[in-house]
Structures are given as C-alpha cells and as structure tokens.
Image (cartoon, rainbow, N blue to C red; front, side, top):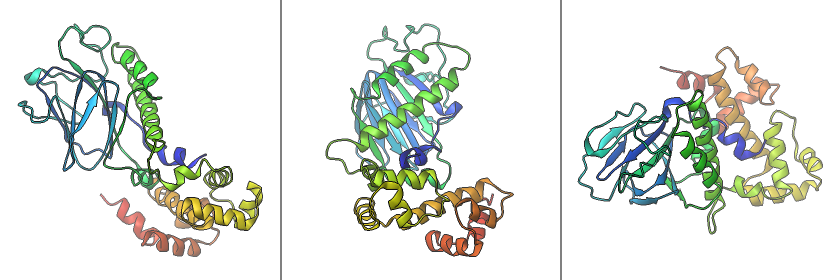
Length: 318
C-alpha cells in the first residue's frame, strides 16, 4: 500500500452525489452543499467556476476542476451572467427556468444518445461528483490540496471522460455503481496529474514515493503500520544503512521515519476509535502497534492534543 492509496481510500463517490447537467445559456448553478471535494468536468461546451472568495476559473470542454470545501461555488455561462442562481446540492431539482436541466445519470427522452444535446446550439454538458470525506486518514489528503485545482484536457483523464459520456447517455441496471467508480477513477487521475504538473509543489510524501529507498520505506510503513519498526529494521528492509535511510527520509519527507510512523499510527487510531465503537482503547492501541495502552494514550495526546477517550467522545457526539 502506498501513501496516496491509503489517503484516498476514504474518498469515494456514492449514489446521489453524482450529477450530470445539460445547460443552455444563460445559467447559474449554485452548488450549496460545500462538500469536502467536488469534481467538475465539462464534456461539451464551456463555462466558468466561481468559488467563494476566489477568482473565477474558465472551464472548457474536457477540462476538470476540483473544488475543496467547505466553501460553495457557482457554475455560470459567463461571469456576470443575468441568470438567477439555482441552488444545487445532493437533491438538485429539475428547474424549468434558465434553460437548465439536471440529470442523475439516466437518459432523457430527446437527447442525442451521447448526452451532448448537440442539436441545441451552445449547450454545455457538465459532470459533477461531490465527495464526502470520511475520517482523519482522508483529511490528510485534503490538507495537501488548494481550494481550487485544475487539470487541462489531453491527459490520462480523457479515456475516463469517454466512458462517462457513454454511461450517462443510457439507462441500464447497475448504472449508478458504474458512474460512481468512473468518478473515483476520474478523481484519482486528476489528482495524479495535478501533483505531477510541471513546476508544481506536491506534498513531500508524494514526491518521496518516487525515491527508490524512501518510497520503499513509505510503502513498508503503510503496509505494516503495527510492526515493531526501528530505523535499523526499516533500513535493513530497504537495503541501505541506518544513517543513509534516516538522512534520506528526513530530507525528502521532512521528518524522521519513526516520527512519520507515529503520526500515521495516530491517524489510523483516530479513525478506529470512531469506527469501532465496541473496541477499547487497549484494542485500538494493539491494532496500531502498541502493547501498552498507556504509552499509546501518551503518544496520541502528544500528536492529537487530546487523549483517545476524549477524542472518541467528541467525535461521536450527536
């Protein structure tokens, strides 16, 4: 398991969080949910994404923008449009005004079979996926992202867009599952391209994964977080000296290997405390590699600023 796979595993599209809108100008769709992550990509046409307190971003055919919540944003035909904003969320209505329609992945009678509405001059088809982000693991991914990131057309996401365009044009059993997984695939491709963009500044753990030594060490820590790791043991598994690993890891990741491991264990533990209601603090401690619950509690408080029991109580409070 690599670091990126671990961090993104809790970010998944699900059911009604998918939307496909075919629009004729003027339009203004206001996405009001403030989802932790919202992916917007245009199949045909163009428009503008206008985030709260941020400059507008032009979005042309087959380009993708990801907006990080909790702020909301609007998709408009042009900046300063005369259209009245229509609130869209998980249960977006089917408005009659503004020439807008909202589909949830099924085929509307009268469409051209490709979801493009090519017979309607100036029509734009927007695909939107809103992602709930569950737990502390995926929050580490959010912390590495800006409020708005964009990826141009022509990258690895294009084949996914072809599949999306074909799927939204039909009404078949299991369609929602297919759309959800396509959106997940789209998000992974988009984030990969953004992290790898020329001149970009990806998070340290992303760049470090490419290093043959540190990348191997990171994969080991993520695959076996509860193992009794020492710097010496990790160095032995990666085939370098203890001092070489320690220096190389700190240079690329920004902290020593065991400091990284402790923070990762506490992230895992935070989610386990919430997800496994019947598990005791001692159970969680053993799961993340601590035989002594008192040592685990001290480490958790040092990293998270609160002891495990108080964290669980606050996180699960109604």
